[in-house]
Image (cartoon, rainbow, N blue to C red):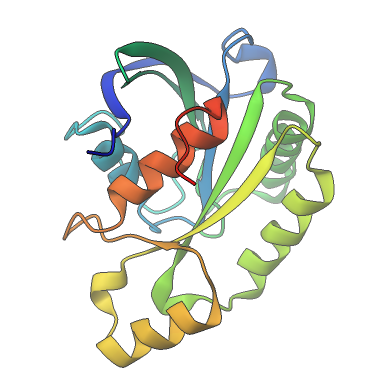
Length: 204
């Protein structure tokens, strides 16, 4: 019987408006990023099996904070510690140009300077999978990846697709697709995160 990594601890640590306010480094981190309303909070809650661990705003783009969560994994009678980092959703924020520039600089500084980041998870709405904004984010992240970092694209809201649309998406890209509503793909994503961070117990 295959062993599965499970999250047995998940706690909110703090929200930081800038990299200077961020949690101290030292723990392997997973960054979750994506357009506003892509389902970041729902995905985090599903992964951690917690309903309200990550809170979503009723106004897309309103949250402009970097949120940190301490995560405990259990695998093969061993405990592993990680940290999930929820970046502000991009694309919808109604702020001034000056605020927007400051916000983008904070995020860029965080992404490029944060040594603890091991995995970037880019959530993309499966219904809108060719947007220029998402393509630009993907190209940027891949351009700054260090040898010890990985990039993973994850399609969300696949329950909103028709069967032929989902089949076409799967043929086009070999990636993880999730539905938080139907709880599909979450276990696969959790395993991908765990094995990327800790490189133990991977199946041949």
